[in-house]
Amino acid sequence: MGMTMSQKILAAHAGLESVKAGQLIEAKLDMVLGNDITSPVAINVFNDGNACSVFDNTKIAMVMDHFTPNKDIKAAEQCAQVRRFADKYDIKNFYDVGQMGIEHALLPEKGLVGPGSLCIGADSHTCTYGALGAFSTGVGSTDMAAGMISGKAWFKVPSAIKFVLTGKPAEHISGKDVILHIIGKIGVDGALYRSMEFVGDGLQYLNIDDRLCIANMAIEAGAKNGIFPVDDITREYTQGRFQGEPHEYVADDDAEYDEEYVIDLSTLRPTVAFPHLPENARTVDEIGETEVKIDQAVIGSCTNGRITDLRAAADILRGKKVAKGVRCIIIPGTQSVYLQAMHEGLFDIFIEAGAVVSTPTCGPCLGGHMGILAKGEKAVTTTNRNFVGRMGHVESEVYLASPAVAAASAVTGYITDPAKVK
Amino acid sequence: MKAQGTVHKYGDNVDTDVIIPARYLNTSSHKELASHCMEDIDIDFTKKVKEGDIIVAEKNFGCGSSREHAPIAIKASGISCVIASTFARIFYRNAINIGLPILECDAASKEIKSGDEVSVDFDTGVITDITTGKTYQAEPFPPFIQGIIKDGGLINHVTK
Image 1 (cartoon, rainbow over the protein chains, first blue to last red):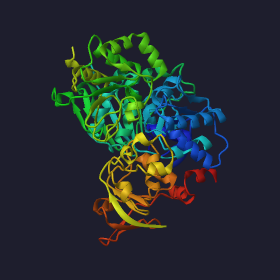
Image 2 (image 1 turned 45 degrees about the horizontal axis):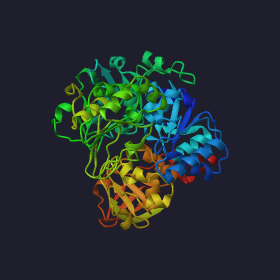
Image 3 (image 1 turned 180 degrees about the vertical axis):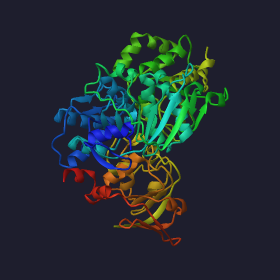
Image 4 (image 1 turned 90 degrees about the vertical axis):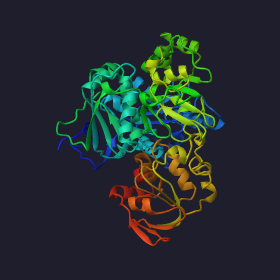
């Protein structure tokens, strides 16, 4: 029986000719990732296990992105602990304020992951790198510690769901609308323990940022990973950037899939996930013009903090003003995205519109800092989760949307179809 | 190995943000994390939980973030076992890796009620609702995972 793309990458890293769904394997890791929240727990486990060396100091990345620039004394202590560890073990890919970006925007950009890589990260959105044809999945801090020590991790080989994307998306339809539509269809546990493999002729219309956004939210359907085949769009992005040796894996023709969905991208509409689950998807056509009044719009995060996301927001905000009573916060994902957006004049557009531009941080996405909601407040945001209390008060509400929808909503003060902001 | 305690019951999709809100992730102290356990879904949880108590929930328990702080907070608050219909996969891994016993059992997750006295036999996977007298059979762990549990968690397993 044939293998899926994910299974092929796992087999190659386990030194096996083939693997099948359900099999437990131990595989060699190309990259082990942690951030300022999960690394301290991993370091404690590392030290408690009396470990005294890491498997490879070039294959570990530690990114200080969640509560940075340090939001309080405790956050500062956590970063200090990671900084000391990185110094002691000479961790080559330690990214502190000044070099850091949001981890899942940063690692692809720096070329630390690429086609065929096997990566684990102590952050659930590590599944983002599947956009580059890598097998990449989120784990906890103990797995991170074990990975740092041994360079290996255990996996239960996943079965897969195939998503055949066809057709050309209309204006204002981005990767975010694609993945919110899919999660709305299959639910927050629709892909539990499984791979989501995206294929089809519609991929030619999804740029690398769209794909990173789609793979990023595979976890919101419960998936182990989301993955795209490697094509010219991938190669154009990774060539000259990826520090490793790229390996292009292709699913076998007779690979078995648990389910198959065909999604015609040309039929998709701007989509919003209502509180308090990413599966509560509605198109803008199903939302009344003044149904959801917002207090805050956030454009950024590991889901939508890349240059094409900021351009999409700028296209809407150009020459417009953020509505009275709305706080619009824009967060470029990395220093490089920040510089590029600045050089392209996007910051002029944002600031003249009345938005603020923040340094890269995960900040408000997880209710950390830089944009917390009060009781009863509502935010439209390009982030990835809208759970109870996710962005602040337990009685606040989070609506997930694309950069175009978030920007359009910032202008009108209500969740709005971007086509209606002229 | 056995556990017995009073049940705290929750529904579907209990996410790690309600198990331990991110505003408390500026510490890795187990005791401090436990003091905010389940705060955004059950504000009185930390007042009523007793050593040995059991959490029973329905599908996709622990979905969302990979924060190991979630099973740590649950374990440090005295919970002896979590029973659910299904677990989100990262939570499942994390619980095993840190030695928080978890069991998947659809019937138990649907029928057991808050306040019931329940006992669990981890060797056999038998769950007994002492209050109602009903018993349930949970899915056993594969031998590989049993090995990790036997070694006392993943770190002992990889460093032995």
